[in-house]
Image 1 (cartoon, one colour):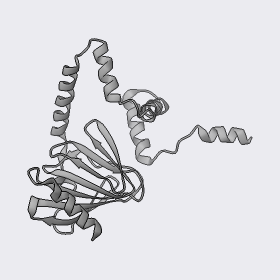
Image 2 (cartoon, helix red, strand yellow; image 1 turned 135 degrees about the vertical axis):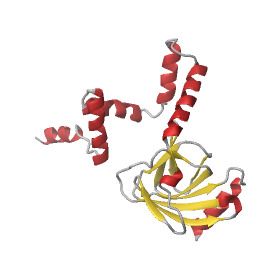
Image 3 (cartoon, one colour; image 1 turned 120 degrees about the vertical axis):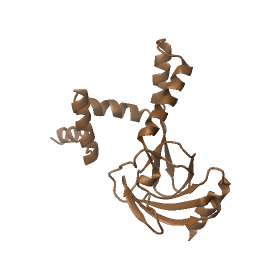
Image 4 (cartoon, helix red, strand yellow; image 1 turned 90 degrees about the vertical axis):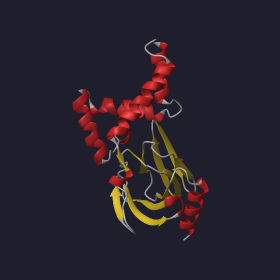
Length: 212
């Protein structure tokens, strides 16, 4: 009886509500079961040593369907097309002094706006563990992030980066991305700086705000 219960427990995953709803929508679109969809996604995610986008490229090249140069061009065009459907940060970042907003699983507050380099600094803190990403978006300025605690995932183009406490991350202006807190204690500072400004400005500002 104990063995049967143990096996039954191992067969099931507890999904967050938003994930379950998205799987149900995907089931209607694809016409296959949630189990089949979930298993295919998990197999890809569990083998992190194999970049899926590179596997797809290699398979297409080996089949003679496309050259590497054509594939790279197609990815670039697809990202530009996606950019036209995405939003700038103005859609969800708070505006004005000490403004606040919510996006995905983040609480966001505006901390300061400094003249040199036109630096805008925001504080991000996890508000729940539903792990909802911000909308895919871009900034007209360079983004410099400093993770204060927990772990944060940055999805940039076709790549994903997990950044831990006391580590920084940079995203150039115009680059499509989204972000999500992976732990309940995730907090980070984000500085947006004019692309032609000295990168050290953002580093200095983030260090000052982090210790204030």
